[in-house]
Image (tube, rainbow, N blue to C red):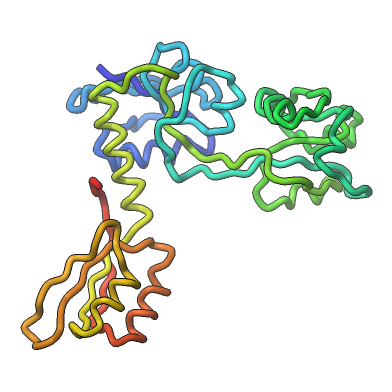
Length: 281
């Protein structure tokens, strides 16, 4: 039976459970449950701290797990990304006092406070920058004011919390993170895990795309298909109306309105958008 780790709490927990449900797997109804067995799919789900998931997977105790890319790197576990899940996005950045101009090179010789020491140490090593990394469990934005650190490295969304603490972001992002499905480095992908990946990929793709249907004059098909090339090729069907065809193609959800505007401008009509709940590509 396939053993999969799922975040038991935090920002990734709810979204991880939701995507697994959409992929056809059972999920717990009681948040106190630590293990759930899905006999129909031959899967055991273990609900663990997101920070620990990569470690369990990396040691081979579990076949796979859902965690954040930042937590995977920070753990130093022998685990690797198998699939990007397209949720839980965050950006990891440096920040320092707003009374001076900072650069990444200026971090050398400073004290850097963070809740992700493994991630920060790995980044600094890649840049050949020597600094003292100070591990804190949270509220790192207070560490500079309290004299514990000179610089912080933390997850940043809007940056409002940092500005309120008199700090400003500097340098390029240390890391752009999101939820990822991980497996042990070098381990073979079992058939059951292949099915899980295929199902999850289907949901991820379905969330990104919509199905677009429209009618267009035959003379404009080439122009219309250039606007909606689809993943491989659009489906084109003749209509009863002479010299008109129906076209169906997958379109990125975020580009839907722009594409509809362009199709209308060239003469397409009857443009319809349909959600995709699941797919296999």
